[in-house]
Length: 476
Ligand code: ADP
Ligand code: MG
Image (cartoon, rainbow, N blue to C red; front, side):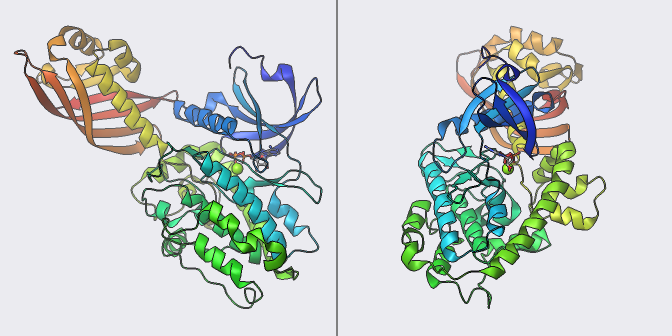
């Protein structure tokens, strides 16, 4: 990656196409071929190590995917301050914006859109990827022509699975109205979360409003968890029963009973739409979608501004103990009134990776101690580290000299392995956190007998210039 020429040597940047929390997407032109691309530009200076890993993950996932209904990653480049993900340009804008400009729109059109979305989702799932942020904003169109195809974009929240069918907790992430019951219940989850989001999208495609909605996020989440939705009269009276059943199958609250993307593609309303999907024009749906789009754009605009300055606050709120609380953005709104805060709640929630990173660094620190690796230890600690430990007696030790000495001079206590039990991460602020856990080390004692040493440890972490450093350790 590093031996490549810088971005600016190959491409010329043009106007902005879109904006997210961590990135700006701009049109760019290849200087030699004149071909158009969309560059997702990330300012590296504003990224923490964790954000950097997320970016690398997005790139790795995108590079892995090649499908007609997915925006294609073309290249990835660096310069001093920025990272660029260069995608093939799609020029049709967002699917939902195009739909409302149509003069005629029927179930059959909705079926065609949903088929393409499901094709992209089926492919991702076959490739062991969960997208996790399926929603209208991330459904683009390849061109402005009538035969344009739907392209799924934005793998910024996607996760890579290990290939097993085992559900796992991958963190709380997604966009409120599209979150599945299992994610809201903080249960292990798997690819069915994407099918749930497809069900929400299909519902909106048919009537122009979402199946679950409430101004209060708490009530919204309660509706979703119990899968409480209906097909109100009169707008649903004209919708075919086949697609109603398909929606019920996609919005099944039990992920193990939920239809899969592949099964949904075989549903006659999708696979034989010429025969099954109705062709009556749905004017009220277009009107509903117009309002839905307008609301979405407003929320997006408010949130983008807020997130640019306070993505961290968002993470912080997500890290607290319960998901049933006021919208995360609220605490950090600089000027917005409460209605704007509620509106902002619709946008993407980034997973609670802060906790993961802190646990990772704590584990790395334990490993450094186990391996008696002072260099690795030093990189994870502040030079002013304060330590309370058995070896130090009643003294509070400051600095790294003591640790350096112990690591070098107590090889007889060298542990074979160290395990972290029941760790707890408590976020104290944007830049500080406490990690407490029980450490079990298996070690040979002086007489050569394998023993297990238990110690209770608390570490205080502080973020300095983007990196978490341990500033205090207390072991007993
Ligand atoms: P974020 O993670 O910040 O939401 P996205 O990948 O969703 O970033 O891109 C943000 C916006 O940029 C999209 O909503 C879309 O408007 C535009 N965009 C993204 N990829 C392309 C592309 N390949 N061609 C044209 N526009 C794009
Ligand atoms: Mg996006």
